[in-house]
Structures are given as C-alpha cells and as structure tokens.
Length: 326
Image 1 (tube, rainbow, N blue to C red):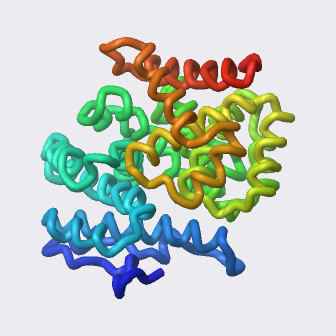
Image 2: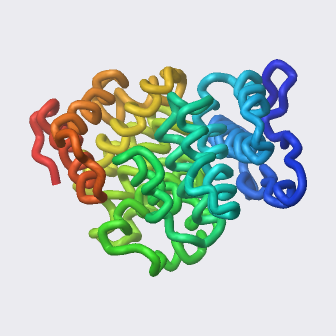
C-alpha cells in the first residue's frame, strides 16, 4: 500500500486535543482476509479514508494536499471521504457551522463532492448524531448522501445489529431509512469481501421493502471500490435481476459513475463494473444521473427530490434497455 514512498495509512500529526480524534487503519480494515484483489481494494479504500481523516485533523490544507499528491489518483476519492468525516466532526465539536466542510468542498476536494458528503455522514455517525441538520450545510441535493454515509458508518460499527438482526436506528424517518440502507448496501460490499454471492445472500435475508436500496448501495461500492472479477459482477447482476431489482443495481452504478467521471478517476473498478452492472460505458451511465438531475428543475433540495432523482435515473436506464422499472 505504498506509492512513491508514501504510506497512506500514516497519520499526519494533529495538535492538542485533535490528536485524540485520529483514526487507525486497523479499526476499519479488520478480520481474517485471504490475500487477493478484494482484500486489496477494500484495504486501500479504507486506509486512504483514514489517511484523509487524519490529514484533515491537522487543519492545514497543505498537509491534505501533500497526502493527495502521494496517493494514486483513483484513491483520492476515499481520502476526500475521510477528510469530509473529519471536517464534519471538527465543525460539530467547535460549533463552526459547517465552515471546514465548505472550505474542503471549495478547495482540495472541489471535484469530489460525492465523497465529501458521504464522509460527512460518517463523521456524524462517529459522534452518534443524526446527519440531517448537518446536511443543510452542503450541496442542495448531494447533501443527502450524508445519510448514506451515516448508514455505512453506523453499520460498520454495529454490524451485528444492522446486518444480523437487520435493525434500523430510531433517529431517522422512514423515508430517510431508505437512504440509510444505501450506505448499509455499500458496507455489505466491504463486509462480504466483494463476494457477489455473499452480498446477494445477505440482501436476500432482508425484508423485500429494504432490498432496492441495498442493491443500489452494493452497486455503488462495486463500481467505486471494486475488488470483484467480471464473472462475479455478472453474477451480482443476475441475482439482482432475479430478485426484481435490476434497475436499482443500475441506478447505484450510475450514481457512482457520475462521481468517478466528475473526479476524473475513470480507472480500474469503474471501467470493469459499469458495462456489466449498467450495460453501458461509464460516461453514458453518468449521463443518466446528470440528465435526471436536470429534469428535476432548478430548486431541488429536499429528500423527496433526492429520491425522485434516483427514480428518474432508474427510468433512464430502463428506457435505454427497453425495460420496465420496479
């Protein structure tokens, strides 16, 4: 996990009380993993997240930029996610009203808004706070990704309750639980070591009403984090179709495609996953999400608008493939 002599798991020092907030990569990459592409993909994603988190604690943009310069471009998105989490935590603890998060979005993470908003939700989860209020500080619609990030982090820390008992935190409305489940779906991809069979089996154990968002979240992670072979991705697509949620899988993939195209990180995982999960090249899949957002009009900001954006993206995929959405 080294690149040009830089260890992405190393933690740039933060001063004073902020040092107590520093994360350890071992906290987020744990378990008896066999060596292979899946392990490498998840480890690199989460170690880059931890590095971004710790670099942002230093509150010096130069420290974070130095970290990015030492990472492969495709891992910047995970470092920005970590920086988003740390910025949200610092904003909350210092009553800064979202200032650090806004500075991150307008500065070194200007092309990584998806990642920063996902990270902000993880920051709220670290402090056991619902992300809804903090979401107001971000992009009018991408801010709802904070609920997704919150779902990922809460599920990571309480996976026995969230995965085995299929519990749902009581801090969210029913509609927002759907977005929480997208984060849980992303976590499933990490937890099940990018195994299509294991992820599909996990999703099958959840109530029918929760599966659409779990499939979308799993597809987002399969596209963004990677770790699966083409054969495994084909199996994931087959299982989602058999479950009746093929369009949800494509929608999650399209949202991830939109993120990686904007980030300029069209490498590896996305190039392999998008043609299989969405049946299109990444630029085309990203355009479904882009055009669907434009179709909603100019003043889109509510959670209902976010859900409508997803639904329109599913319809765009269905029109492309002449299918009917569920």
